[in-house]
Amino acid sequence: MREPSTAKLAKFFPEASPVRIPVRLTRIAPDGSPCTESTVIEFGTPREVLFASTLPLEFADKVRVQNSDGTLDAEASVVALQYDSGCTAVAARFTRQVTNWIVKS
Image (cartoon, rainbow, N blue to C red; front, top):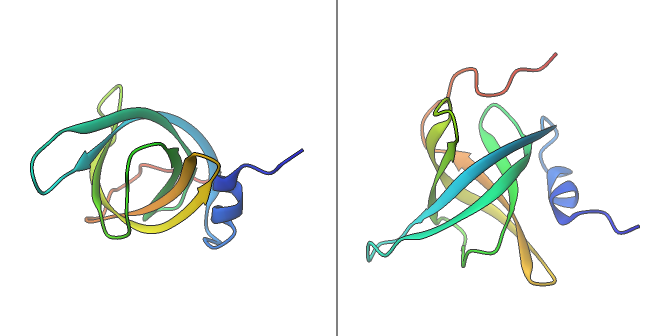
């Protein structure tokens, strides 16, 4: 069975823990045109989120990540991309500290 590309990308982030957090992802475009999708954060660190996306994202693009109950609503900058058959694995780093969004047990 083929390994999901987000798992491959997570290998570059040693602190990454597997999570499954459904979110709404919005690309913050310079021209102001909205570009949104629903996705799942598959891995996270205290500073980064890793997810699959079909949005036209590039390195250094800004995105807004929001979960349904509002406990996560943060801006992040794309720091890594891995393309894989029509879908892209993305790592984005929060632009500001987000406290207690991920808790390690």
